[in-house]
Image (cartoon, rainbow, N blue to C red; front, side):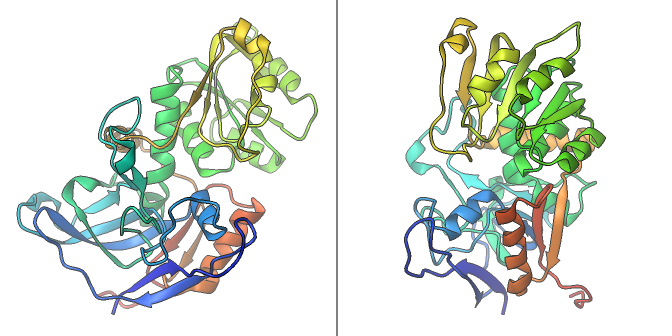
Length: 360
């Protein structure tokens, strides 16, 4: 029988508990009208999954399969589906309940991310999944299964932050991306470079900054330095010495730091707050007409636009490390250790088949 992975409930306080992974044997599902049966080839981790295991995320399900990112192949189609999708490689939409409104989900009560979610009995830590036909897009042909699984959640999040929210997704814009090394930050870097933007980054690791430069960033600074915003200001070109936008996943003192190098009317887009649930605002930002915009994952429309851009530009998501075998719980735990230690540069991926598995 096929496998799935769920998280197992144990006693403990939020932030102190660590829910173990549980391997399950489950029946192979069958598609209904308008649905597709997908054989998953790879799934990827996100920080959301780390928070779930620590009970730091709302509405956790202990029966729904884990993980939200997935790449697979259509192996069976239900009635009233397009025959053109049969045997095609696809990317799974990692959320439900948001069609196209650029302001946010049309009905927030119906919006949710899949993977150990009480709202939707779906997740990608399983070998087979049934989804509605409109919840997949054709995978860009140049992507490997691991690269395809690395793309959905961070891709649509980065696309919304950069393209929909920042107003700076254009050639010669000056953009700062904080916390390079994480999936969303790296995906934003790849998109911005492909659009011809001038990009700078922050990181606590010089090695990660160097890798970002190899990927097309103009330079970077260590956020561990007390004067990193001054260092950044000296790096900006003399003909255009201010930033147009900051794409931030940390929160904290990002406004106080970056307002000094932002242009009047510049934009700070915050898609995450890893340093804490509050941010400081100051009078200098107000006087410079700086805009602070919150951003989440994007709509189904933005997801499709992002996937087409990846196809057109040949973008390859950065994969930090891969383990093989959905039943390889020890290896998957190792991926979570990478994430907890901040060691990854790119996405952490589970490829379903172990090395040398027979081809069925």
